[in-house]
Image (cartoon, rainbow, N blue to C red):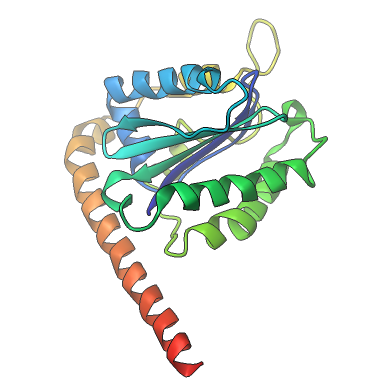
Length: 224
């Protein structure tokens, strides 16, 4: 399965971590219906869990958002997977394993961490831990190939303060603020042409890495 997006946030909306690894965020930024559906999913899906860890999903364009809630800590975890790759493996078991790894990180070193006071350096350190202890072990064909990179309106890099209250914005309000920034005209004009083409090449690269990985595993098995 191809990883497109990860977002972690606390029950009360405090942002922990958010990162795109494909075209999902760029598509959401260009499509008002995807954008409103994305914000609706972030605000309503976690409330549906109660004390259950049951998997909930929302389909947005070419991506399926898979939600989980860790208890009793109250961390909400959302993973975006490209729908064209969801049949690769038993996705539920694999995502459950990923949630366990993320939860181990949050409950371990970051068990008492104050995410309201987080800094960009702290987020970079957390991302490195996420990559090596959760993402790479779960997604063997993973490649960080984001479209919008530093301009992504749905990434999380430290806190954004409300200009009136001077308090940190929750994750949804932060995304709304980022989304409202003017887009470059050239990006507006080329978005609908470029993004489908990008996704085609991105999936092609994913499938190539998958074949290479499987061949490598087969060679190792034959040597044993």
